[in-house]
Length: 489
Image 1 (cartoon, one colour):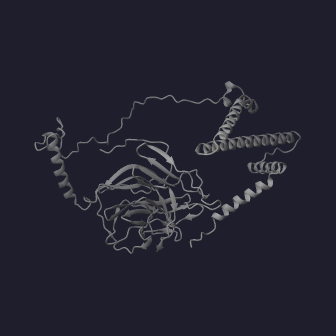
Image 2: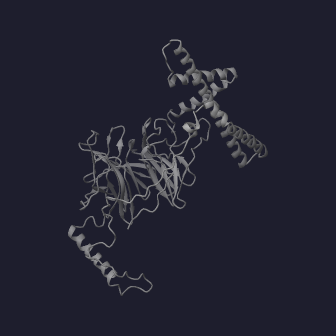
Image 3: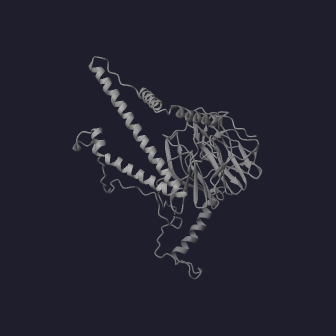
């Protein structure tokens, strides 16, 4: 019986990401999470899960080798695909809300954690997202997805020979699968099994008439033809954004989402290609032979067993030999459950508690002034340790710690100045309202403009304005350089 064993927290909250397994580690690339920024170009994040220690780690961002030049790293995206060939992860496709879809191939070395863009040739697929990718030997197969240039679903199959880095558009035979995206494609032997995905009822173009196919389509990579898979007696609900994998020659499907039903799934399905071509009578005959043999071994014992094997189970009472021996999960949950109440801990904040009096920021800052004194002593201690260690790894750690302390101190001063500015503006507006003027409070954008003006006045007063503007120009020039076309020659 299959069962879940471990429930872990601390991983990335993502959907439409891509992951590969390398030994006892799982590499997760990108994905979408509500609330995050997908309009600003930033590096794709890579999370690694260790199946031995059951811990998640996140790789640090890649720093440019040359200052002012953007590193070769794919931007943050979702709906992309990743496959593992030898020690290299090939990432392709996906989209970002600013740049749209992408068709550049990226390679990630799992040993050095470095990115590269291999030079490819042939018929490169159009930029898309929501496609699927699987591997047979040294060849990566891409199927379906939503093409950005054509603005429609796709059912094309492209393959990439990683030994020659050549793309090829496959001219398939037979009845092709329907156009779709966010489906799954799993390679079992030389056959690619496609399941699920989102499609349109009337054709490849999206007309808000979504359908979710629940049949399995099979593509033979040797003959490059689509095969007809007979329907099974029991079919799962159609879904998209699920996960699929192959194990011991069988296909497993987990989870997914169906927008027409407005339902997220958490069920697990298994498909056996060897028994999919059998008729219903042949399946019953096979089940009868297997269960009868198991029944005899459990009840009567098997005299032909080898010495040292597991003893037979005694007192096994089975009403029907065709009935499974494992316990069924379809047990009705009782209406009146025994729920153990758990007292929830409520944290008390003294700033907003009536028992502690009215909150006064000035009194609060004076009360907790000793924290600033402790931070100052810690900063002096780090400076003394930094003088002792002139070089080496300890010097770099102390320097980073001192830099973080200085940044925190600057941020605290900036927040204090903004608070004083808001308080002064509020007092000024209240004084004007008492004189008969119409009450008006500044918007956040106007407050930011005033804070920026005060900042420039302070920089000009301290004669640091020129250096500040020069740094800002260099930073903006570096951002503009990212949007320039890359010279691939």
